[in-house]
Image 1 (tube, rainbow, N blue to C red):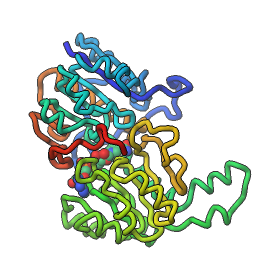
Image 2: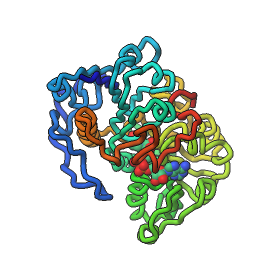
Image 3: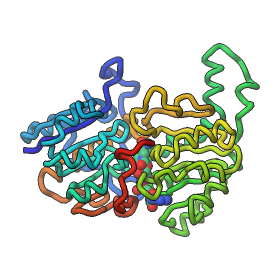
Image 4: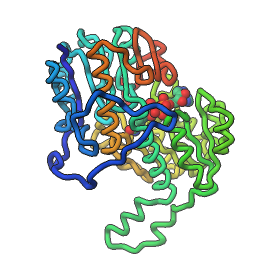
Length: 396
Ligand code: NAD
């Protein structure tokens, strides 16, 4: 019987919700590329309820315990005395969400002698040292597409939030003011701007499609070029590298995975090559940008705004400079964990567990590492070239 160690974010400070704002979430069909929704044999939760926090348990307890497996759920994940580290040595499966990542560094993987599956309930497995997972023969899987549209919506929201100067305007409304000039002195229309994405995978493409009706000029860079028909349909300008794109746009939205090729891609030099007054939105991973280069560019005016929902480490310290830098519109890491997204990735997590525990193959598209190599989506979107997996232990 398997021991499943699941790290989830803490419940709301007001307690696990007894009631929700809405009674249901929409039922969706296949994903935009035809991939089918998660298909576990059953689910033991009500879609639309909070599943990603400790009491939600991703809806897994009934299913696992009915089969005699052990489920341990904790939010205590950091440091040698954490419950995660104490339970890790004899865990067969670790489940973690990127919003509250259980960092599986090479050292922790070395301690996890029974670990066979590191399952990301969501998308983005850079919190696992992928090189170490390859070497240890651990399968790494994630619930591909489960929250890609959720993130795309958040990125579009944050682009508009920055360009329209939403948060300062809201501040005046909420604090009794009517300060029109204070609100608009940094407010612009998005229409007519050049907007680009770094990576046009599932999220990046969804952002491009959502922005097309805004009357912007769209640009992208991806290591895989999109089909010509799609480029023509959306009026996309392709750039051969990040430098070319960064210098050609007013807004950059980052949607690449974090791996050695993208680690600290947006450093002071690349940001310095952008048009004065550019905006960066980063809902991908914090370490794709250099933390202090962002702060300095906001202070100097090179950047007019920075927004995103990804930080390093997570949770960040109370004095993390992105909490107080000027012209930011940061959120905690929430874009991919709406109640809508949770229903999909909880179902996908169960689908992966059902297959793994029954000895069946996990869907190819969910795989990041398998059989001692990058596999599935991992083989297309990541590199594991022997250098450290950036998200799993270095400082940001
Ligand atoms: P995806 O696999 O569909 O797309 C990734 C794309 O990145 C691919 O098209 C790939 O070719 C491209 N790419 C890889 N390396 C690149 C490089 N060096 N330069 C340019 N392009 C490169 O993944 P997705 O669903 O679009 O998700 C992308 C990333 O977004 C995830 O890896 C994750 O880090 C992040 N994410 C964040 C959240 C959140 O809640 N904020 C949720 C989901 C995913």
